[in-house]
Length: 138
Image (cartoon, rainbow, N blue to C red):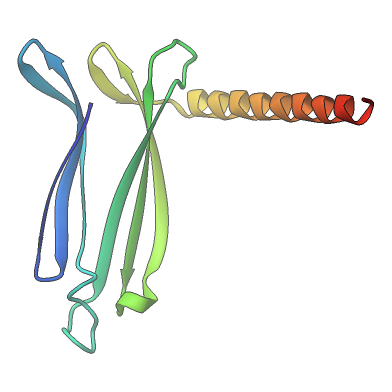
């Protein structure tokens, strides 16, 4: 279960994102990360402070084909002298949710998952093309 808490003031935003499960009445955090920005109060000319931003999104998907959701975490980070000139980079981390723990997924598993998605996409495209062909012969 994802949970987000945040605080905003004076042009700055900061917060935490966590995903957790409940062990009876006790919430157990499996993974958490921080996000935030100062885009409303930055810029070397105006404030003397550089601008920064960190945004995190999670996609829950079955990486191992075991009918259990795992997590792909995309972190978009930006920094710059001015809010209009922020340089962005994206960092992707992948986690397996096993035995009530969040553990980094192996690169081999991530590659296998990408290959499986590609095969499904190609299969869907072939099916779509076949349906288009059948419509044309009616």
